[in-house]
Each structure stands twice: as structure tokens, then as C-alpha cells.
Length: 247
Image (tube, rainbow, N blue to C red):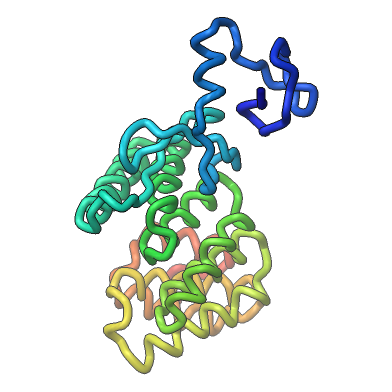
């Protein structure tokens, strides 16, 4: 038999895995039969990395290691069905986010990513969920995937810049924001007004951290014009030691 956590081959009477130490759930004949059934798939769990995904029903799988539910397109699952699942999972993730349940948000987005790894919204939101949990470096994996697929979308570069900013890499973040700004200047409709405000605000913070407070004030003023929240502007001014009345 095999360990359901890491896949290591074990003696039939093993209680614990000799490779990873996980308890082997083989307490009865029924459990042994479940392990004997073919149930391993090439897709891996994005939450824990396990490849032990058990099929629950058509297009739906369960990670037996951490419990995350995944959806995968099969021949008898229509594109409309998949699209509906993505929308439902993104809505579910948003609801968890509003409740502050960041781990459940990540799990919902992991499920969405498992069936739509080339969906821009999924990639960006999945990356941002990693930032919320304190893993900005991991978020870069998904932002770079989005960059390869959507090189003309300014918000992709804003997210890359933010992940770098969170790690204190201000010099590396600066050109990412500038790439976003260059696209927005050519095509102001390439991003929603609210996202443009965030771009201006984040760029102001970035250049301010690098010592250019004059440019920081300029972009904070632009962010304010686009509806950037007063609370966010106050916070950035405080962080950069810029008098609020100058913005």
C-alpha cells in the first residue's frame, strides 16, 4: 500500500509512514479497499502539494491530505458548467474574505485555480490571497503567470509591484508600477478608476520609501483625484512623514 500523504510505498500492516510520519488510516478492510482503488490524478493540491486527490463525482475531487475540494474539467462537463463553478468559487472566496477567514478564501481560490489556471481574475486573486496570509514571494508565482498571459494589463504589474513592496524590495517594485502607469497613460480605460487610484497610491508609497517625496506627493494627489480613500492617504503620509496638507 501507499501513504496517502506523500505516496511512499509501505508494508500492508504499517501504521505510520516511514518517510513522512503520517498515520496510515488502515484500521479496517473498508479503508484498505479505498486505498487499493485507483484514485490518483496528475493534478496536485495547490493548498498542500499532495497529489492524492480522490474523485467524489464527475469533475469534483477531494484532497485527502488537507480536505480542499477541487474541480476539474472532464469530457462530460460543459464549459458553461466550469464557468459557473469558477464564478461560484470566486464569490465564495469573496464572502470568506469579508468574514476575515483568509484560509478558507485561499482554499476556494485554490479550487478555482485548479480548473482555471489561465483565468486572470483567478490568478490575481489567488496571488493576493497569499499576500494576505503573509506569503508575498509565493504570490509572485501566480502574478508572473498572469504577466505571461496578459502582458498588456496594467493591473498585473500593479500586483507584481505590490508583492515586491510587501517584501521591502522598493527598487524592484518601482519599474513594475511604472510599467502599469505607462499602459494607463496610453489607454486610461485599461483599468477601472478604483484600480488606477490604488496604482497611484502604491507608487507614491514606493517612491517615497526610496526617498523621492516630491513624486510621492504628486501621485498621492492623483490618487486623491481618482477617489483614493482618505484613510489610505493619511496612512501613506504618516509612513512617509509627509504633511497631510501638502497632498
